[in-house]
Figure 1 (tube, one colour):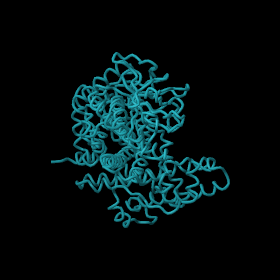
Figure 2 (figure 1 turned 90 degrees about the vertical axis):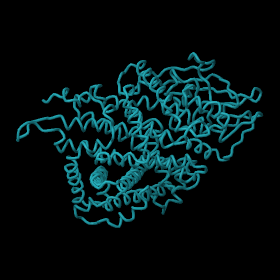
Figure 3 (figure 1 turned 45 degrees about the vertical axis):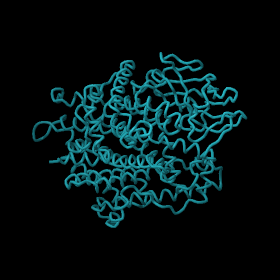
Figure 4 (figure 1 turned 45 degrees about the horizontal axis):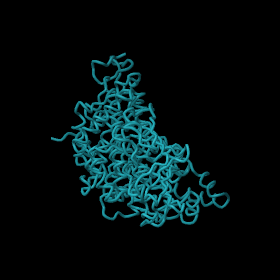
Length: 639
């Protein structure tokens, strides 16, 4: 008989639950038991050993197409790497770099000659690579990278060069020690001196003994804030020559005589099409951050169900979890973890659908990229906040390495930065909203964006999530009145989220229109940047709530659905409370009803208290992977 906890876990696991269950079994073996050491030599050696074991079990095959030696199950590939976060985030990053970023670049940007030469070796770890995009001087602004790849028709070679100090490839996972080859992003220059924008090239950087090849200088980033098992490094090129065939030429090619051709004429569209094929990395980072947050909240919740503090008038001491303030600290974060995971499930499914399609719809691809950007930011910011709160909720015990929380905190800290700075990603989300998914929006500079918004921002179609088929029914049940109970009505909650998003999009468009008439386009955009970020936040909050609604609808067990309903209430009311000032200022909430939001959160925390352990059981984290010394009774000392 299936328990309520199992129903919760199955619902939260979503479409690839079988993959998650298999990973739970495999990661429960001794070799994947979480460990923490600041010693980079030990940590890197351990991760290399784990990666080899994964490869021998066929872990990478799902991520590559059948014709290239894989299974072609994109959703399973993303899910597997997400699950690694519960064991060791260094392992997750190393696997993601080798198979997701480096392997993904070869498969998605290359053609048959590259697939035959490299893909099977990448799957088997016979060829270790790195993804050399970011430079010392340019990270988020990839179009302005300074590394050059100049074609020499006399030898039919590209010359890869780092012409400036800031063109050094920096923070590159695998570059310090293990990578033998790099997927290098550089400005392609043809013999006539014309630049054709950023393209990707296969560049050998080390020989079989690990020595730098001529013209290549690598160095080690050494100690970082976390991820000691990842050998981040730097690469500089001094006129390194590679064969013409090493250009990954799916979207552009250079003939022997130096003639440049591309099936996509518009250089901006070409650039964003190339980057769009690499979306899987961003999806994976967000999902992995969410998994790490769930581990931390699981540990903190179980600790609060054991640890006692201060005298109970009825005798004994009070459990931490019996204090409302403690429930207030953990339950809203648990609720957000549930909400974000439902949204992540939809994102992975959409990514799988588009990346396995023969001819993906361009509009759906843009929408995927926007959603991946927004959810990556939401998940990683949530992880940073949730893990810190979990650490504090465990007091001094949470600061000990043996209890896992400091490693989770350190290892996820950079997730808000890589695969796109979160603030930049939220601007991408807002840009999609403001331009109503118009053609060529991704090629627009901020100046062009402002001009477009000034002329065309207006009515737009609300892009819904998987909840689309049930959303109208839910909205029809809303209760728009001042009664406190109506705040628990799902239709009322959804309408409040939708109204906030719609109002914000329209108002930021009006502000841009007004500002663009009195100042430069850049200044106009810059003056509303805070508003732009708020728009993106409102949009992501809305699609996350809709995903939660769809998740509840898919749950087959009545008791599990009831618990999920309470958790969804808590998520919705917490979002409203966090933005309460906006709702009151814009008269979407009266002051009295705003007070009722806070009372509603307290009510849901009290009602969820009996289900505290059930909620984290629903995360499905195996004992081996949640292992923290303080959770074992013999190590708990009541004071």
